[in-house]
Image (cartoon, rainbow, N blue to C red; front, side, top):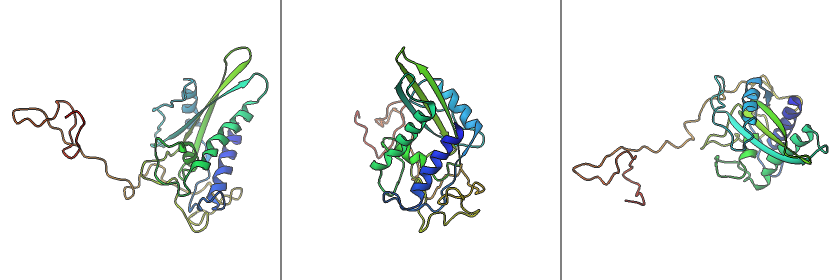
Length: 231
């Protein structure tokens, strides 16, 4: 199962990275994905919750910004194999490209292309998934799938860096099977955050109601340039 998942994800990444797919620009240095047992174990714990909301406990010592995709499929008993359903769900995530802008710019948590952007995250060097099959009744089963990725899409960063030619930035060469992706020997700093492209956080001051009457509510953060609706 793990090889099936990795192959399918790398196939889709290679397609988009080429610069010849649906108008998307070529990827300068997109990583080839490999399987990671630790990410898979954390995905298994998440899958056992039988929830699509994901979980916030997935970062590891090696990976500080882990991304996560979840999926759910309901199907008739005996008609579909686990691999068939897995392939369907991954292709469903990838299918969000039809609604994506060709630049794949900043991450937007409210966007309906979040799954596609995660699949195309250039520094997602490792992944691990888990699948849970559950019987709903005599006729229907359901499958939960959770996949963790070594790097999530951080707000302010593009999913991948654009290049004139695919793989033109690969320092260790290209993957012979997926020539638009970098070799598995390519090194990435998956935990780095690009401080030049990320907007600085909003700085807030703490003020409290007192003799001078600042209009601030005790215990609430107050920013002098933002008019709160209840003041």
